[in-house]
Length: 252
Image 1 (spheres, rainbow, N blue to C red):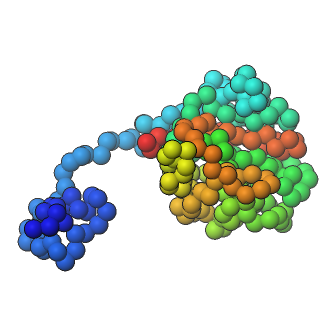
Image 2: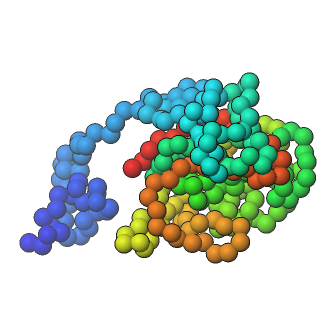
């Protein structure tokens, strides 16, 4: 008998698919039932609150979990009375003190209600996974067109979003991001990372392959790396983008 025939059907399902024609068809329901391992229980958050196993990165009370990306000093952005934070122009990006690999990330952001400038200079910021892979934050409302692989919800310069799902300027958007980190072996990438992005409940990036870094100029690069911070961008153009309610669930 081949090794394939010796594998129980239930285990074969776990490892990626049915055994197929070489496996005898089950004759009882028990033969296709799996009882272990039992998934952990997670209590969902109510009214926008994080789930029970989430790591809360920003709850509106402090910058305790954040530092300056420029020099690792205290974050210099503005902490607002409404429980949000706002980019302080030309103070630089901020990033989490903690590093992460594959994660589920929830983050809320808004561009200012008062429209200023245009193109890439209007409400521009970004959410960087592993510190190097950017999901674009931009105010594309009011006919503010730009290159589509750099518009709101794009994986910057790599993947055009499936839709533009922003709420009106000055209102809160949500990003729910599923990020699977790339895998490196002996300094070479052996498996690409992937990203899924849901913007205000709308799927805009569907398990897309991360081709590498997301530079403004040049092709994606693939420097080997392990876990890294979550970084929020100061675009340096008085963007006044605000963030709130940031949490993650680790997936690895």
